[in-house]
Image (cartoon, rainbow, N blue to C red):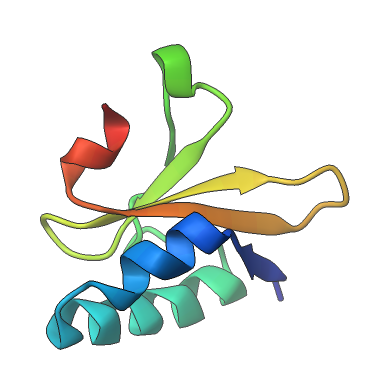
Length: 86
């Protein structure tokens, strides 16, 4: 099982989400913790200025951006629509 930590920025953005999106994100996190490459997540490496990060889909609009840490864990750094990539 993957160990996930949350940046303060991620927590702040998560708290502001609509309840429906929060519930979807929690469900996807359960899948993520079991297998970060599960096809239902559409996990992918980002490019350009964000090439140190990865992302997976919460739903058609929302994504969670994360980083792999040096100790093999995962840190969720942002959540939101495609605007998180800007």
